[in-house]
Length: 168
Ligand code: APR
Image 1 (cartoon, rainbow, N blue to C red):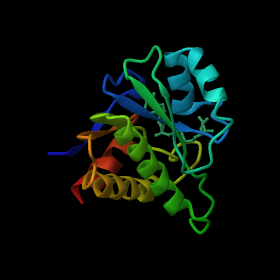
Image 2: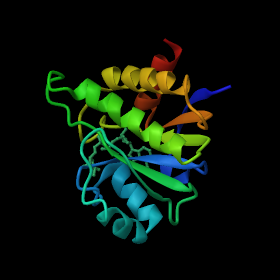
Image 3: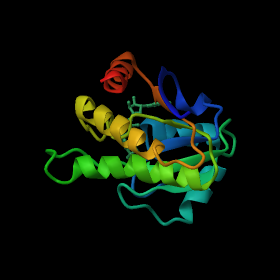
């Protein structure tokens, strides 16, 4: 029986199989959750990311979790919000779907996501949350290994948006 959970917290503390990083296309770190994950994983993560030579928006790359409690980190650059008419919704769905596919390929049963693109990338939260929940639900219908997907929300407004989308 698969499930989706929405919890408050800091994703670097997640002790499941994999966490997803809201990265940028260089994969060379940044602020927000990307910065938090690189700080917590340690400098070996930077070296592991260099070998990818970047990652296109909506795609995903996997590394070890290094010093994190999670075994793996899935790095996905979400879309930068412009006006919603430049493929942003589809690219956000791709980030969730491609991250889940990679997680499943690596046999993970539990995976945590931050709220991709709703920080620095300014994707409206009330549009991003339903896209995320719908994409995760769709994936879980055919997942081979993934059992539980957890949205780890850094603030109460974000948590409420995902809880609302989950209950819709
Ligand atoms: N745990 C969970 N969520 C977090 C954490 C954390 N430790 N830190 C921040 N967040 C949340 C933010 O509050 C926001 O809800 O992650 C969500 C995504 O925000 P950003 O980190 O700004 O990511 P995004 O909007 O996708 O922008 C990506 O920002 O940090 C840079 O290198 C990154 O260029 C990329 C861009």
